[in-house]
Image 1 (cartoon, helix red, strand yellow):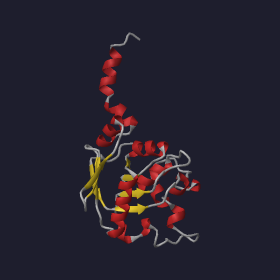
Image 2: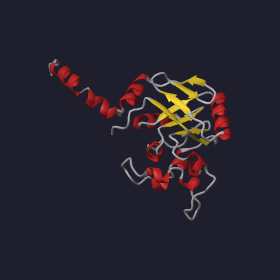
Image 3: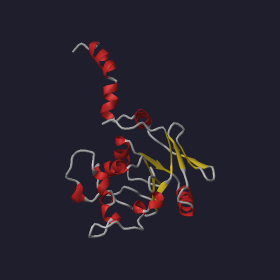
Image 4: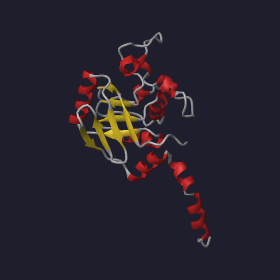
Length: 199
């Protein structure tokens, strides 16, 4: 499933300074029946965004109008822990986010995000706190995420930090490829190589 290329993203951000956010909170298990990657955004953080009667919880950041339209979420340490459900990453993308920033990610969640076009940016604890402080002071604070240079910058102060990403996954993000797209893009090379094989 191809997705939009990711190069440089400049956006405001939703702040979620809560540690150990697990995948069952990101997308509750009762919403995992679908097998396609669409429709999960409606239930992204369902139990935190809505009360038991289905009414939006006004003061939850994802419902707060002052953050509306953000393409980045800044989360607390150990974001995406818990079960390995791919649906958690699908819900992030379907909600409209292209980047999640945290001081630590669960490995499986990180890889699931990279496979569907969401960039997980791991920064230091100190830099993450600077982002939270800046967003709290001004909800319109913009963050620039530059994938080619692997940097994230707080535009209001110019402070920047580099982040790591696997070279293969970086190439896929820049081209808008998932693993299958990557192989299909190499189809001619694969066929030419196959013709040289004696079997």
